[in-house]
Structures are given as C-alpha cells and as structure tokens.
Image (cartoon, rainbow, N blue to C red; front, side, top):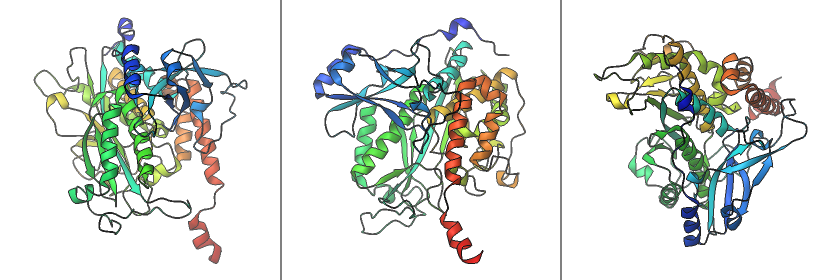
Length: 460
C-alpha cells in the first residue's frame, strides 16, 4: 500500500521565472499594466489591474475573500461558513505564469495568482488552493499526476438576446455551416483570422497545444493540450478559455464552453487523460515488463467509487446535465473499458509509458482546477485503499443503467453529504461551494422557460 513520506510533501514546485526576466520582458514590450487574475469557482478570471512598475516592486495586492466564491449570477451566498466581516485575502503571483496578454490593445501582461489568507495560509475557498492540496498528497507519496485535457467549444454568431438560440456564424462561402463535418480540414480552415490569432495567443501564453480538430457540431472544435504537470496544465486550460473568449469577441464571434449550448447538437466535453508517475519518472500504471499494473485498477475503482459524490466539480452548472445523453459519446455511467468511448472511463490503446485513464465525465464548462482535483483525489484514494474496480466493459456502455446524477440539485445534495469530499477538500470549501451552487439552482428555478410558455400556456 502507498504510504506518505512527510519529507516529500515539502518538495519545492518547479522553478519560477525570475523577477529579472519579467522586468526585461516588460521593458522589451513596454508593458503598462498587469492583469492580476485568479480563477473563481466557475473557472472565470477575476482580479485587479495593476500598474506594471508596482507589480515589479512586489506591492501587496488584496481582494475580498468572498470573490473566489462568486456565483455565476453575480450573487454571493450568506451561508455562515463565510465570515460576516468579509475579510481580505492576499493575491500572490505565480511568476511562472507571467506572460504578455495577447488580447489587450495596449501592452499588458497577465499573471495567475494564489489567494492567501493574511496569515499566509492558502484560502480554502479558492479553486487553485483545492488542487494544490490534492497534489501535495501525491507529492507526499513520491508521486506526480500527469494530465492532458481535451477542450471542446463552439464558435457562434453574436447573441444579443439570450432568449434566442445560438446560431452558427457565416463562413467563407457566405453561408452558415450546417454540421456533420467532424474532422473536416475544410471546415477547420474556416474563420482563419480567429484561429491564427488564437494560435499566436497560445504561444504567447505558454499554452502547449497538441491537435486542433473540427468536432461534430456546426462550428464546434476541440483543442487538445499536451500532457504535463497537473497545476501547469490547469493554468493553461484556464488561460486558454480566457484567450478564446476574448479573441472570439474581437472577431465578432462567441467562444462558447457551455456543456450543451445548442439543442439537438453535440455537447462540449473536457476529457481528462490522467497517468501517475513515480520519482524515477515511471508510469505506476505499468509494470517493468510493460504489462498493466494493479495500480491502474485501483485508480479506476477510486473514480468509480467517489466521482458520483464529486459530480458537482465535473458538472457544475444547470446546463451540465443536458450533456449526458445515451448514444451521444457523452457518458451516462461510470463503467470502464479498453478503448471504449461509450463508457465514462476509457483506457486508450497506448504503450506502457503512456498508459492512462481517460475521465470522460467533465464538461467544457467545468473549472479545470476543480475537475482535476476531484479526479485526482478519487483516484488517489483508490490507490491508497487498494479498491477493486468493476470488470472492464467490452460492449455498449449505454446498455448499462444511467447511474450519474441527472440534475445539479442532485449533485449538490450528494456533495453536501459526502464525508469523502469534506475529508479531501475541507469543510469550508465543500460547505461554501455547495451553498453557492444551491444559490444558482434557486435562481434557475425562478426562471420560466420557453418550453413552459410554448406548451403549457395554450393547453393548461
């Protein structure tokens, strides 16, 4: 059984960029301001704009502790877990993330920050803190997760009236795409000015992308990020979504990461490919002879056992649950199989060093820090407790029961009552996160939908 080594928990993070190098970058490009940002619970960038010279001087920046837990509606929960005094937290820059802001119309930089309490401890309400806590438990065991996300999104025409459905934009031939063009290079070449700028932005931001493809939906795309350190890749996914949205707006488009933005069309996923390596760089899912290690089954079992309680971190919004439709290549349960895309957990065909688990549950709307934290925490518990997985499924996963939560409300209840979630992420985070999500659910319940007006108004 894997046991923690306290000495390993204190191992330092990868070396950060020096302040001298940052100063030279700012000087070379005439950087005027720095976007001091952090991800809130939705994975949305929040923070403050700071003059570059004050950033270089190391001036302390603070923000309200409640901001990381702001609801998508802009509201705040008044659950007692949040202090009535609304105290400050410090924003501490991660210098390794400093880069030019490619969406800015004046020279500007961007830097991802951690939220720290005034005593120097990580703020428990901040998603980056949540992932750091999980990664520290891996480090204590001499392990390091390697993650690669596949991020799907739509490019749509402007949508001034939210009551109207999203529409595909006009492309080169003067008509809107009608779909069913998966993996088409012609369709991938459409909207080239946007793609050229986004590619340049990824290079500027240090986002290591792999393949870019056209997906099934009309003007739906998938960009795969290269595998790497979980925190670094989460930062890249966060910046990728920020850059895509900003650059799309410059080109008269919307980059849409909702899990199911268009009725009758494919949903947007964020599949997470996960492996775990030891201190020698060996994949613990493979034995020395290249065969499958028992650790793979234990990791899968952890995901099967605990992800149902953590679905709110993988499917965080009301819309998220519309994606889980049988026959859509979105999962409906946590069956697993070898190279089987009908299951929630897939083992892609690969060599021993690349043996990995593909978690297909997360939508593109998920906060990458929280989706990774949930997946890695569940898998690690399976490793440590040596849990046993189900048998691999060779057939159609949609023939098995729909066992995932069917609504955000159901997932809120599951996480609220999860002893595992509270042990892994702490009572303040779980209570606060569920309180905010319950607030969003209540806001949704107050809306009257088009469906209700269409069918109920004339007939009941």
